[in-house]
Length: 102
Image (tube, rainbow, N blue to C red; front, side, top):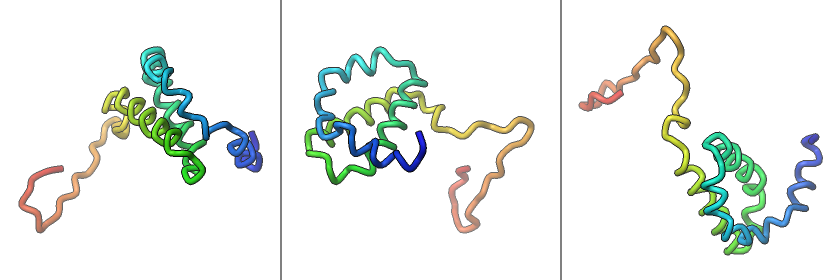
């Protein structure tokens, strides 16, 4: 889809009725793979974030709950940057810090 059509497309989505997904949330969570959950949360963020102000509270609550469930369903490792082979990332230490944390 050309980017110029994106705002028009988003405005035509029935996101104000997003709360109708509430009964389907358990099915969405159990029937989707980790990869699908990550893609889904990314897409709903892209589609809904420009319209936060237009969402009625029940739809916004559904968006927040669904996003939270999807993110919590992903393993922590998907949020870590991939390690580069053969090189370690530099550890930056604060010279004024007493902590020995990377």
